[in-house]
Amino acid sequence: MLSTQLNESFIDILSANPIFKGIERRVIGKITAYAEAHIEIFEKNEYIMRAGDFPSEFGIVLSGGVTAVGYGADGRESIYAVLRTGDHFADILVASENKESPVSLFSERHNTKIIMIPFRGITKPNREIFEYQSLIIRNFFNVISMKYWELMKKIDYMSVFPIKRRTALYLSDESEKESNKCEDGYFAVKFDREGMASYLNADRSALSRVLSEMKKEGLISFNKNKFKIENKKGLDVISGKINI
Image 1: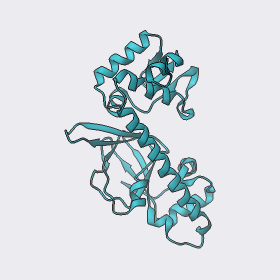
Image 2 (image 1 turned 180 degrees about the vertical axis):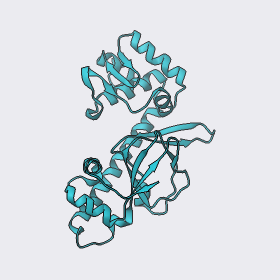
Image 3 (image 1 turned 180 degrees about the horizontal axis):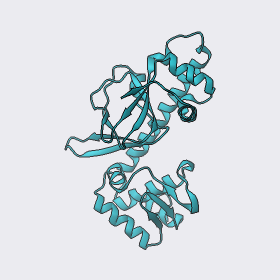
């Protein structure tokens, strides 16, 4: 389902996205209109993009959620990312030209809204928004650089064994992100237990066993996707961040 209506709450979301960093709200509306951006609405579990597609538009989640999954040579599914309101996708692909998507994306929830923005639409010359286009392009490549380092971090996790050490390292890293912090010292991760296991390339039951073990050892507390570090030094020793 398609829509072109961009209300104030959606502009709030776009203005908080790093691609539009430094762009005035009134200009965001002009840019998206000139680029012929459009809002698409998806039902739960509906595909947004399939592996092998060649996207010409990048997307920003306005409501709902999106999961990006890939498949290994053995056919095993792996979650690459879970996207929430304000997150974006396909930016690297559209900036690379003629690159096929290595992952499939599908909506997690009913009525997931995504604004799809043609990359060419925001980069082709236009006198009205010319002064902002160089900023958008600079923002774009800053975002791509950040994603590169995020990918390197995941590769680092994959090289860590056993699973307890890998999990400890992941939780320690996530606890240090300001955007994850909640009340009472807790922090939230994007994944449910199954998603977390997939992201860490671990069996779900093995991950649950490790988390329960760390809880009994007084290292962490948790409730669903919210965690609290009870013994940071102890966790960092297990993760390898601290050598003793």
